[in-house]
Length: 223
Image (cartoon, rainbow, N blue to C red; front, side, top):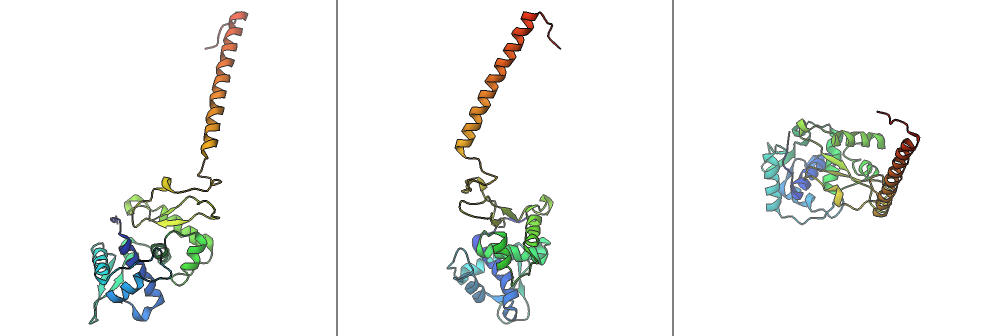
């Protein structure tokens, strides 16, 4: 299933629905008021928002149009559930990782494992990486990648991962650690170009020398 890019608030609301389904099951599905409170939490949220009930309702309606949320039945107050796993055919582990990324922004594998603990318990870091790799390699016919591994930032020990439900990320515009495998310093690039030019000049000289030797020795040139 291919989706349009979600707005920041739509992603936040979707993440809240996934989170609260696990952390406060007795209060789930959620009313608009509960969704607003969850979206505006000051903890475990990045960035911190200050959305109104009306804005959250608009976000819910947008998610309903994408089949990512639906109204729960049997309550006097309208309540909502998420449909992320079914809509995108994702396992619960992948849904948990996407939710944490939507709620807290880009994170390292270790941070994701710790922050997703209440939503899904991963056996180890390699398990988290495995699900992230699957989400990053999601084929185009299924809607394409849902996460991306970002270049390691200056001063950081590990690279971070980000969700793509809110649209593509221009990785080339991000700061990169000097010793990152994805980074070549400008000075190093200039040095490489200088070396290449010197090698080309040396090769041209060697070719001229060989040509002169052929002429002096009267040796026929090979085909």
